[in-house]
Each structure stands twice: as C-alpha cells, then as structure tokens.
Image (cartoon, rainbow, N blue to C red; front, side, top):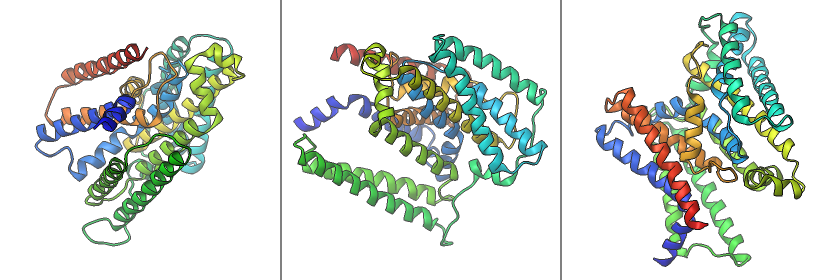
Length: 386
C-alpha cells in the first residue's frame, strides 16, 4: 500500500490526467446509454480529433519552451487551401503536393520563429499577427470560396482504413496488430525494469509490476478489438502513433529534447550551460509550422474540401489539450503523451456532450471550466512541492 501511495504521489500529474480521462469516459458512456464506446463512435472520435492531436504534439513543445502559438489554426487553413489549389486546380500528384505543403508549413514556422528567437518579439504578438496574416491569406487564396473535391488517395489519409487479411466479422489484421503491440510493450517494460534494477534504482514491487503489464495488455487488446468490430485501424491512427513515438523519443532521449526542457525551465541558466537558446526556439517554431501544415492537410482530407473557415479555434483546442495534459504555463514541464491524453479528454467531452444533446453554449462553458481547473491543479501542485 505504501508503494502505491509513493507511486501515485511521485506521478500525480501523469496519473491524474489518466484517471480524469477514464472518469469522463465512464460518465459519458453512462449518460449516452452506451453509445460513446460503440466501435463506430470510437472510430469517429479518433478521426474527428486527429488534427487537434497533431497540433497538440507541436504545441506542447512550444509551451515547454515558455512560448505560445496562436496562429496554428490559420496556418492549417492556409496550407489546406494551397494544397487544394495544387491538387484540385492544377492536378498535381498528391504526394508531391503533400511534401510541398509540409515545406510551406515549415517555412511559415521559420518566418515566425525568426521574429521570436532572433528579434525577441514575444511569441504572443508574433503569432497573433500570424493568426490574422494567414487567415487573410487563406481568404485571398480561396477568393472566399471552397475548393473541392480532393483526389481519393488524399482523402484516404483521413478516412481510409488498413485492409483486412481475413474476411470475417472481425478485422483480423487489427487483432494481430493488437497482440504484436502487447508483446512489444511488455518486452520494453521488462527490459526497462531489468535496467533499473541493475543500476539500483527503485522500481515497482513485482506484483504491482505484473498488474501494470496486465493493465497495458487489457487496454491495448480491448481497444484493438473494438476497432476490429468496425472497419479496423484507420490510417490516421497510424500517423498519430508514429508521431507520438518519434516525438516522445526526441523529448526523452535526445540532446534536442533536453535542451528544449532546459530552455523552458530557465533560459538564462540554459544559455550559460551552452544551450543555443535562439536556435532551439527557432526550430521549435519551424516544427510547429510543419505540424500545423499536416493538421491542415488532415482536416482538408476529412472534409474533402478547403474552406475559408477551416481551422477556426484549432489553436484554443490544442493549447487547452496541452494544459489539461499537464504542461506548465510557466514552461519547462510537459510531455507529448500528456498532450495526447489532454486532447483525448477534450475530444471525449466534445463527443459525449454532443451525444447527450448539450447545446454549444453549455459545451463551451464546461470546457472552459475544465481548462481552468486543470491549470489551477497544476499551480496547486507546484506550490505544494515548492
């Protein structure tokens, strides 16, 4: 029991948001009379929130460095509109258009990163200007009209599924992927435990460790079973999974990740320690621009159209996802996985409130309260540990 208490106390941020996600899911599952966790709704939930989750991955890096980006929704809309002109109006192959769109997003990020990192204009001002600038450019490029339809291959990025290899009522490939993932996760956890024990670090008591592995296995296989009951794994989930793995690795295992945390924790100390703070800030915004572009492409593919109103309020959802997921408003703290869980909390709330018929006015108010509570919880914890 003491071990469990210590474990929870040391990981209160991480476990708090997981418990919140589970509690909100159970609440809306009951209130929606079981509709929330139906296979079709789970798939819709993933596809409807994928572009916000992609933004949240980039936004958490920006917040960790102590900055903010208010322009991501406008950048997503701008890149989506340019991609529509390339693919729909000029018949460009979607792979070429995809690469050029991502480069355009990175260029936008470099433009904003330059003003923030090297001219030292606050990110709030630069990205607020960017929000207006790229929204205006979207209207100019689209001439106030929507452009559609996109090629089928491009649409599949948001709406497509991995093909089945069986043919029964369950998607066999999805079940196999679930089992393989379970084996990989258990093997990694086992190896990590052996390494920690080898160097004398504290770890969970063995029964708790086995319970943790059983919980991981149950979550992965129940999730893939639910997906297999509908049409299997959507392509967008694979894109998200790859992004989460890559960015988690960068933030936890690489010099770039350590420098990003150091910059957000204390910029002067980081600079004195040899961290090239301007360069790190610049590249964090370049990365944010590229992910905003990807988000815009995913949204355009899902809608099958580029519209002048695309991306409205995306920045607020992405920022809220990061803070609900444990990122600190003062910088230096936050994780990619936390941002994803925060985004899922927002997504489940949006979906659940729509299912039970709550009006948009109540939805906005409740989401605002949840964000306020999340940041208040963060400040309370910080004061308690100070």
